[in-house]
Image (tube, rainbow, N blue to C red):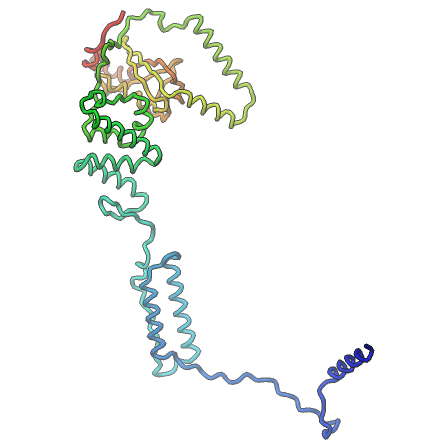
Length: 395
């Protein structure tokens, strides 16, 4: 083992002794120094041949013809600029710019480069074939469907139902309900009850009335809106009521006080915002319908049943349809003198008008003053004559 390590040490010393010398050379002679390697002279490159220039032009032409897929026109401009730079660099290195008789690569024309891609996303209207931006799509489709009503109202109303109602599950439920109505008419043509649909029906309100375009569809297939008298029931909108009818009794005052005390107690309890919102939503979903009565100045009561989530504007429209002078502005006051504005986008359950409420009708004070100043008197009859003729007095 000792001999083995000695041999390794000797080998290391021999290798570290440096370059060897021939025995015939004297010790004083020095080995000639090696000259540092000099880079070989670079031969000038030849300019691009005609075939290379034709291939480059064909490649540029193909790039101009291709439509960009992801990065748009800027990426293709960068590619063309890079190819042009490389060709110029090769021509500069080879000296082709100064050498006579060298063919130059013509720069590709930029004409039409702005048409390589469409600057934006466009949609094609299936009805008119017009090319539209996203902000123009909805209004144009709505106008196109409205124009199609004159040619085919049934198809136009169906397109309106499937186009402007985004909740597909609700659309499917409403279409299935309409199909059931039509199946009943087809299977029982002799039954008169299947040819009438009560607009205040719960199923109709929840499944069909909430969809845009359903009323146009029923009118297109032959349905008409009409006010029908209920058999075996008296139609009355005027009552002889005592003066204390609108006064609260002692029991009602106690009940109102108890409800207010409970409301104050709930407000005094510390609750998080999520708890308050959850309770408000639960109260809003508690009622589906509301019964609203409007007391007119002549003593008549106008009554209607509404969907709890309908807006205040629906009530104003209901009252205006019953007025003889429907062009005059009026006001509706809730209990406590709260004025309901027609412009407010609030639902009945958000205004506290559920499950029932009594409202007071009054003409606009400024308009009444103008009428009196003109020497005229407002009409004593507020309701339309056809409604007055159907009124029966109840004792």
